[in-house]
Image (cartoon, rainbow, N blue to C red):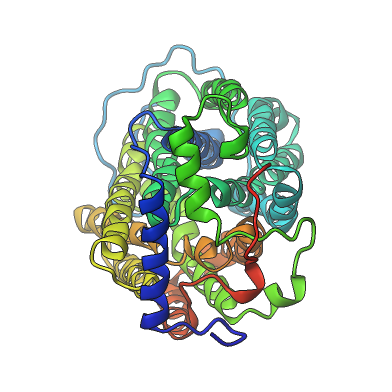
Length: 477
């Protein structure tokens, strides 16, 4: 293996055999009631909260401004003809409505990402130095608190609401880097795809549930309750996280000895023992890392375009009411979550049982999860007022994107598990830029995915890089 971590199929086969030999020495711990799968589901709940708090404003915005406010529950100013819906209840709709133009709305919706981009790399660094549990917990707790303050901020003015959204983004910016750092100590190599897809499917579930539920809350109550309901759900998650989660298997008081040995033994040859030293020079010059950066950046053109603009598209173009809007906006993410979980199972099966090289599996899932969504998202822009075809294309686009969860999204842990949080912080910093500007040039999605997917195919790797591993690692803390 050279300085860029060049790996051959023979290298990969040898690595897989070493993992199997290690697992043979310590019998694999069952998944049922295990600490590692408990962490997967609780972190999934955490990402559910994070994404619910991120997207609920997209639905609330439809009801917060005069130009879209219609007490009948229908939308009469859309490009396409409106769709019939039940008459909206008139009681309890006392929330304020604002005279924000489309430019102001755009700044409000995009302001989250200006905070989100600031804490990506610091989040990965802090997680690697001080532990991921409290960084993840306090990051989401901060977002919860500012979510509860959203109605007050909106009444004070658009500038205050933008400031609150920036602060929410700062809190959420540490979540993914922190969780990657956590998984570096918790995820056995042959279970990474399974565990991480369960964990990060919470983001899809947050979107799936928050969009229709926000629409229902707006329909029957008013938009302020969206932030109170999801804020309360977030507070409950923080209590569970604080009580039940620990930074590593060796610090978990209730983990079985069998599972602790299984995890630590499977990881002993992959993690660095270099203490506080971080090989920044090797990290920033790593070709496999930049392959992930480019793939992550380009994929998010599609993802953030859909995430930010879908409710507005459903309302202003297709003419769906606030109640219908949330339900239909959730469909793409249902498919995405299902394919992400199924893809994780298939990816680990291909690696473990069929002995396919990790790099081949990551590249195949990345290509399918990048090119497919771009094709169908662009196609949706040419469906006119055929709402059945438009919703179908958007759903297929997002569903195929779920396959990338077992592709480049996990690749950080393959090439440098000890520094996965830092690597994720770097890639997610670049990948946040599309959240700021991607929706403005949405028609360029196809080109922003075709060439980068080719680059990732050429330079992506599936083995631990030399600079990221040391032969003597202790999992003590």
